[in-house]
Image (cartoon, rainbow, N blue to C red; front, side):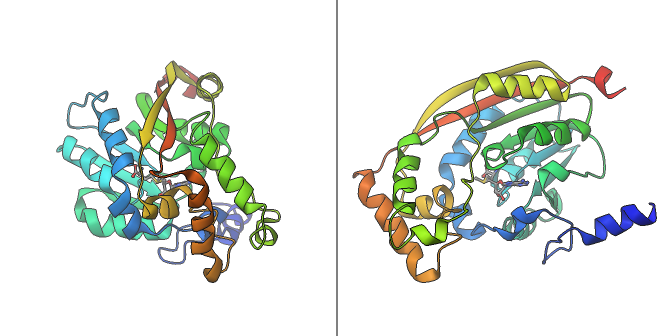
Length: 277
Ligand SMILES: C[S@@+](CC[C@H](N)C(=O)[O-])C[C@H]1O[C@@H](n2cnc3c(N)ncnc32)[C@H](O)[C@@H]1O
């Protein structure tokens, strides 16, 4: 590595717990233990996706945005003669997944748009993650670079229209006192893309046989799910004493029972070796 390149790598922010270089996203962690307990909706969506993934059992798989490792464990069980890498930018998720999975998978603390794997993979699988990443072009290019020629991508994330009315209520609450001052300069965390723009983005990155489609899903969540998943980035800028109050304020407008209209964006594609060459 040249002197200037190594200086660049050293100057990048690093994960406090594992020392890996990560982007600023790592500064915004998750409550991995609670996520693991309340993430049945995501787990169910992942299992549904897995019914579309035919595996021989010897593949090398990346679980992109592996979270607490629940889904990563399912992947590992499906490739007894293969290998599974889980990548996540949140240190608590990485720690949880490492503890939960032991030797079943290699868990790396990285930002997916700066993905660097020890080896190219046959399959990139991802669930409930890509909508947390603003730059899908950078994401798709990074995934593509990490795949073998002919490798498969199968992913699902939030898509256009996802929990629209809930998001509107959260926006209104964030604009009110006493919360508003804390949201000055705050960036909305989600990128809910359409099926069309996602297909174009995947093709631009070099993927072929691209299929994308939206799928509505209804969820009746518990409060902990709303706090830990839906509003995870909203509570970030708030002081401790206002966090529960903000969640209460949003829930008060949502109706009882709370129903969230999720819209999932599915994608499948193949990494075209010709583009890599
Ligand atoms: C809702 S969780 C989904 C976890 C898991 N895939 C599942 O289905 O339960 C979203 C995960 O994406 C991770 N994530 C968000 N942005 C990321 C990025 N840029 N690079 C890596 N992981 C990211 C978060 O840290 C979080 O663990």
